[in-house]
Image 1 (cartoon, rainbow, N blue to C red):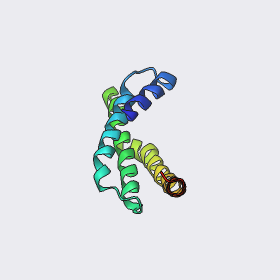
Image 2: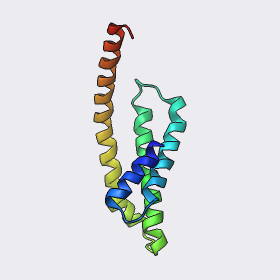
Image 3: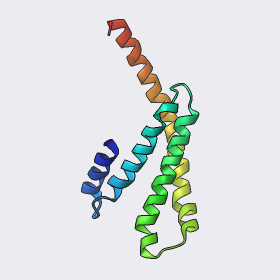
Image 4: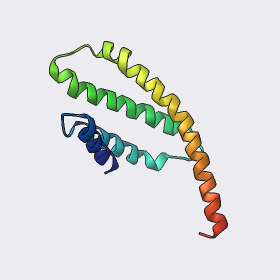
Length: 117
């Protein structure tokens, strides 16, 4: 649901096509939600793999709907110049954000334990 709603918000603000981003984000959200069973908070590997795979799914679906259906068949060029730099940037940023959010979550849980929740 979150992916679908976020995709619709992006489309309302920036896109002339309704449904593309909602479909892409909904698919990514479903796949990540399905992997929730194997998630361990202390292990950084699984979230980074999921972020990388999510970015690849986003790249592939966006390529199919925006370029391939318009006859632009050079996926290698598009991946090297747009997909790969975006993938590297996203994974690097997610390392720092994951650690920051983990620290915030730990402090919040400690505060809740002290208050007796």
